[in-house]
Image 1 (cartoon, rainbow, N blue to C red):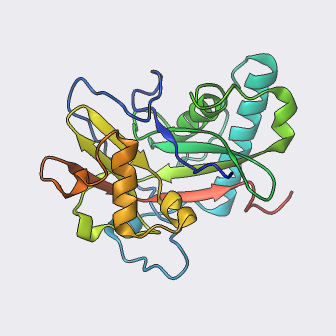
Image 2 (image 1 turned 90 degrees about the vertical axis):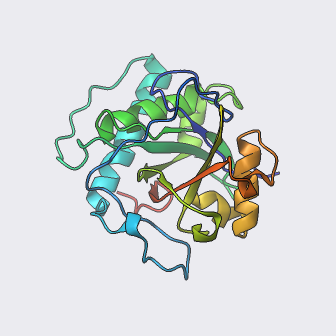
Length: 241
């Protein structure tokens, strides 16, 4: 059975990831400059205020995918961290991201997925750290082994800052969701709803369940709904080089 492509938010940048994350203080949001665009579902409108900034071009996407691949291989094989040497100014800006690992094959099964909204370090650093975390710290899976490396495909989602929204403003295929109530929080990436064929209410309910909340919690005023966009690209989409 195909695994649903749910991912874990690691919002402390280095602490234990959790899909149901208890927070000791109000969640902090960071302003992320100059990176945002989206890859909406087929037929979706692109007129969204989070999607008007400069996207990464194909060369920059390729650099990040290659960085994630080299980092993953070096850490899994040698336990060492790759020295980063990318000099592109856009990739050195602070930005959050998720890194997803999938087994190649007809079902494209999830093998690990961890990310962060925090933008206190460069995008290249976050990509490298989340690639290692997805391979070694996703609690649903055993750590990736060296034998698996040729069988894995890497996907990167570069995130916009989460912004408060209402249920009516959520657009499947464009927005990801972060739902919070008190100490409970759940995050689902935009591509999850598209891959599962969900409508808006199912997407909201699923994010509530991801947070450990009742499925209808999004209807209640004490629940905070935030949306974000993501520029999504993967090795599976990239032309071979």
